[in-house]
Amino acid sequence: MHYIKLLGVTGLVLQFAACGGKTDDTGAEVAGTETEEETEESDAFEWPQDTADAVTTYSNIVVASYEDSVITATALNEALAALIADPSTVTLGAAKDAWLASREPYLQTEVYRFYEGPIDNETDGPEGLINAWPLDEVYIDYVIDDTTGAVDYSKGMVNDPSITIDAATLEAANEAGGDANIATGYHAVEFLLWGQDTDPNGPGNRSYTDYNDAGLAQNAERRGQYLTTVGTMLVDHLLGVHDQWIEGATYRTDFESDTASAIEKMLTGMIILSGFETGGERLQAALDAADQEEEHSC
Image (cartoon, rainbow, N blue to C red):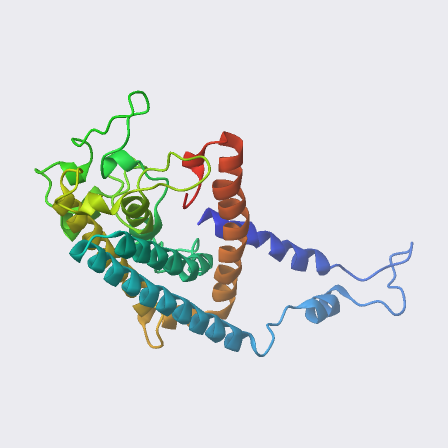
């Protein structure tokens, strides 16, 4: 990745350190100075003896973080099922609380991104299915027309009976035709719980009646099916990442086998998340646009 190359500049420091011995105007060595060979030997970098232990500790923390994410996502999935089985203010509120609780441990795992690990490698990393954003709400469900204030129940996959709602279909639909065409993950669940965010002073305010066939909203059964499907997918995708970090798993074994590469990846995740991702994509973009659509987890 290009990000990893940024860390290569640290190697220049070691190169500049290997300077030659000092000489006088005649070219003779000045007493008490080291020769070039001696300087190179004394400045040769050596990893501390406990470096491998630090890498192992990092792996253990990764496993624990993803385990917490799986546990809280499972609790969220159970709350979603309870909401669909008995839609009410209480069950909707419990599902929202479970979503908020599940976000905390997952957000802590984002420091394990940006170095082609199990979460976001180009081959099969599921990060885009778990946490892709921003989300175009109308891709999933109805939205309120900005001009008329009316609701068009013909919009979104929820309201299109020709679309089968299952894991395979939604995974294929995720980001199909555009980066904002988000069909799965935390932010899809967020929208289906809170609804469209039109309040500058707070989040969306979806009613539990959107999941009640006796309510005014159309396609309540399909909406509930969509919600529980993406909830189950979220658990499955998180579990898949977790399992690649457990002791003895192929990825973890390879990660720990090269200490220098592992340290580089660890630092890369920290640098990119704190700088480019959090400072740029999530904070600066929203500040520059002054638009709540740019708010992450609005």
